[in-house]
Length: 634
Image (cartoon, rainbow, N blue to C red; front, side, top):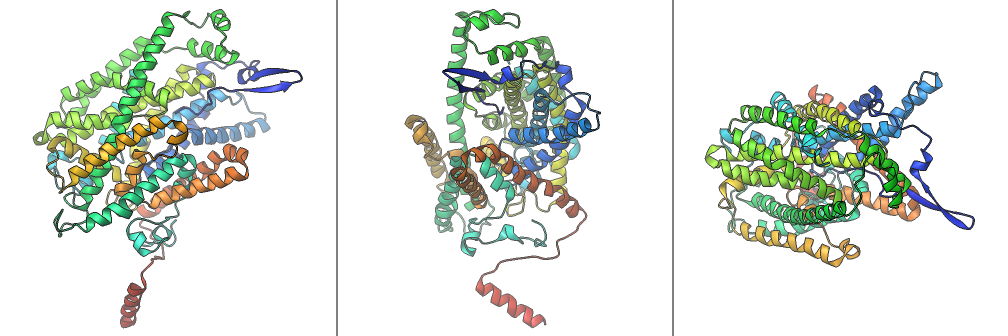
């Protein structure tokens, strides 16, 4: 998840010859601060502030659509802004003792991303909240007491502290408020394309967050989401709805998994699984190939070390890379520390987790921790090659394997979800650490300062993330309920994956399995086609994973994201240089501004302060009936 360019060099014409200027030549006269000097109090103070801010933003995204863009650039920009403003102020009064460095900014970015990353990998919008009674009531299977565990602040913090640090040690040895006074009020319920379209989830809800997300996400992602919404809510669901009474009982509520909701959820799951498994084997093959190539290269080349600068120079390595390798190899983390830390935390976890989840046995956790380091390495290495983290896919594999092992009669649904949390926390954290190491390498930040900032950021996240979730859960009505402001759609998907893993496909409605198989195969074929046609043509072929999201959620956020894409597209046509330079900053401003408002909104909700006006939109016939009713009252 690092946000640096591969080559930070530019060529300039200096008269008759070309000369290469490098980034590190510019900083050559500056002393690189030691790893302890990079870890400053002001850096972690700013990290704490930004960690809270971004955790709120990630939580909001988690509980609405589950689309989480990379926030590295935003964290780096805001971290630079706050610390630079502080140091300029001190400098003006002659009180600045230590200048602000790029290494310190890298520490801030690493710490913030680690902190808000827990808001994602902690499963508050997926596996963890899927354990709750709120989500269990939306399923007709496995909704008994042994498969339910409601969120409580205490056990959530304990769970995260137990599982979130293992990923750090596993890889080191290898390397809108005023008009919203009721439900469905305000501009978020504006029927932009008409009332009929609004009922089928086609509308623009004026979300600055998702407009900003649309500016960050590639055009293909946004258009794929919109296409998925058109295929599902525009075509498939209306057609399947006509089969009510034939394919499924006519009297079933819309939320029953034996009815239309079952098609929505399980077809989306089939798309996600097809895409995930295809990319899993694709990344795994590239990882094995890349790893084998590296082993062959090492056998045929001169070993590099911190004090072997001459072989580096003789081999044609640039000055930038020479300096980066020298700094990166200087402050290595001792392997005994990493191995000892992993074993110690794993032991505590094996003892502790069965007390948090009584259905989860110690041997389930042990097997997970034996397998997890290998999968963490595969995910981190594969993410470095392809920029694609498969943490969620590894989590789903844990759901099916560990949940089925436990069995339906022994709380297999809860066991599968808990195992998913353990696996996702390890492989996700390991991947983030590797990407942060890449950023540190490019900015001459010490691996030790990166590791320490990851540990501190993770510790912050283990407290901040569940606290922010608890604030949402208590402040906003109906969190996790379909149709609410925060429906947490992924939680239902994860729970139904766990049910499918322990019960099989017997609970699916008529023809649902056939449709699931068709979309599963389609997902694989689309991915295969994307790889066969090449990068230029692949940009016109949709992404199945992105298409799956609106299948069970709707297309309203797709319009927001596409408007963000349109803004960026027009901006690039007017002034591409400024769009590339300031586009991420504008997107960050939209996301952060909308996200920050959530905090005072939560406080107002907890204080039971309601907006004074409800603005609703009715059809002409409904409006006549309302007027007649009000006339009778007067």
